[in-house]
Image: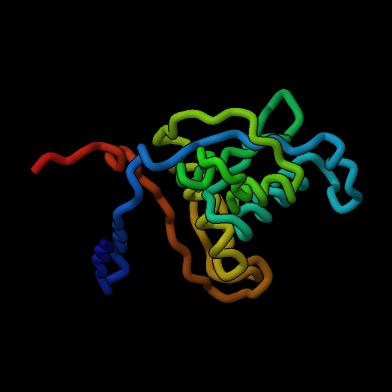
Length: 176
């Protein structure tokens, strides 16, 4: 269920929606194959990590964000997906890999750590995925999204929005 509150006088617009319960989601770390880093299209670890994140955002039913490490190589991604996308089928007949597992293999990403989903990981992955899907119509600038990809050179005022994601109560069970 979506609820939208609009105020025409330039006041904040609040968008709220229901999301899957945390018990129906997995969070995991996907690691970029170090040999894959030799691709000439990547000018740096940062560019290659960003490229892999974007590929995963646009090709699999997941939320993704890069893990920005200060002291090591930028090879890890945090990924959120439905449990059904990772759970193995326990039937006698072999099952094809899920769409997420197949895409990870295609992109040379290794699933290395499945864990319970935290509020902060969910918010980070949701924010990164939303920004990726809104680009280039909306460009991130500091804590805002500015309309258009040419906002620095256009010379005209541009609309901007502030994207704040609050997931602090999203996984609590509400009793009637």
